[in-house]
Image (cartoon, one colour):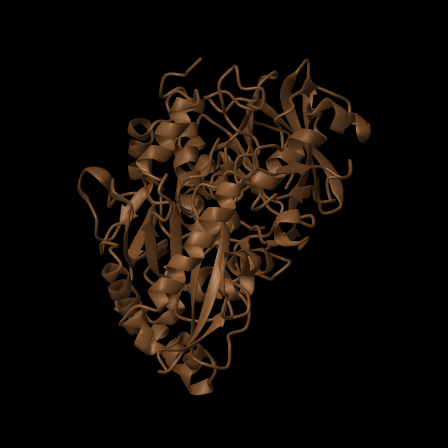
Length: 537
């Protein structure tokens, strides 16, 4: 398909891009082109929630990035999967339906981002939300992004909940309440036993609109400028270079790793870096690629003394057949849920006023997320620090758009992050040593019998991994913030006709999973772009 010009070009069909494509094309007067480097979302492993283990490693659907060797992780490279298909990372993620804390968004506002406080963003969270159970002033049941409750209780999750409550964590049935602290079952972005990605929720209802063009398998090379105005996109498709012009705006929604890469390749970023690769400077913007943040998870693994782990079902032909039958007949069972069922938010640091760690409880175990399950009945408690202080960066290493950027995570770079991580692992082990969970555990596999804080920190350095939430690399911020890439309308500073709408725009990490916040961001950005809400100077 060849297209010469449209009103709006959206680069990246991920958690934010699919939302934008739907909302901007609702008005038939607007012509919209959505460009995605990956294929259509046709793989059955995308739509089956437990298929997460397959898509985690599929190069057709996953960029399969790696960080640079990280000093805080004993010079290890950390594998960073990112979605490469319609739906982006919402097509391969862990399905957890979390928006973070009220204080996160009030914090964005306090950093000079008018219009992004809790009272501003709540209506957009609700606009997107189609909850199967929760309503009232904080929830909606009519939005396109479906949130489903886990229908059956699991004995392992029940034991985890009871042990945590014995340690003072209250049981909750809603992690998206004004008080996040609690332990319970997660809600998932599923609908009738299938994944509800943003491609399913937003793009599928809109894809037949004549004013929406969707280009898949199309790699964006750069943004083209005329007199500091973004006017076109250069892309490669089927081995040919193509130029698509934008009559109104270009919106980058390529994610926290590739939106800054595209900006840098297009001449927007640190002048010294661009000069190194002979890229003509459009605007010296030193914050492009800086402020990289991510949630670092520690996966504690235990062997059970009862066959109640999903490992057992996955390890036998009969077990797999029964799981398949459960899904085919009832859209139920492990195939409909994915990996993680139980969750927990609490405080482990005296300085914290709100929860500072998060747990994901998986009823299976493997050496790494998405890996082959262990031959014994096992489970995994993953714990992460919610608001790390450590900051990394993303920088091009070539002027070739097909060469991935260098990613420096810079995990565990501050004393606070190291102390919080130690306390998080200690708390997880304490839960495992508390009844009734204690009586179900045969032995602790990881960490293996740490004797002190130094041993725990070494475990964190040697086994910590991403929980897939890179953000912040094109942060919005006030005029007096030298690293602010965007203003509070998500417009790229120093040029016109260009915005960034994805997790890279977030100045700080939300306290939890980032998919739903990325959807909210795009819902509000759509209204900003279309002039439906007052713009902020």
